[in-house]
Length: 94
Image (cartoon, rainbow, N blue to C red):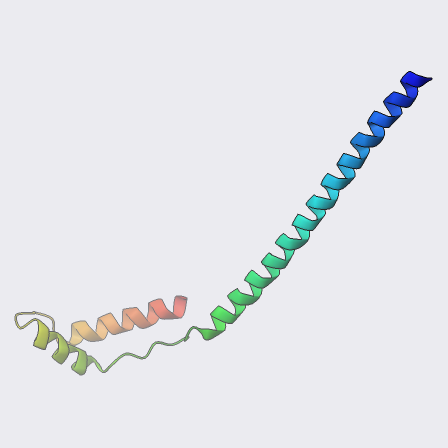
């Protein structure tokens, strides 16, 4: 009988430890769920704050700026227009 009581006491102690551990894990899960909700909310806010369309200077203005910085550049107005078109297409993919 003493051996059975001792065994029951050990199982009871082990069960209490498991309940404590389970409670700690439950708390951790709740904290992680809260973090996930906040991250999702922040992600949505960040998406809304990013401009959807970039505004670029006129191609001629960009070409003039380039020529001012790099006198021997072989870039012409058509090249600048193509670059701006590529940038606007890339921007629309974001």
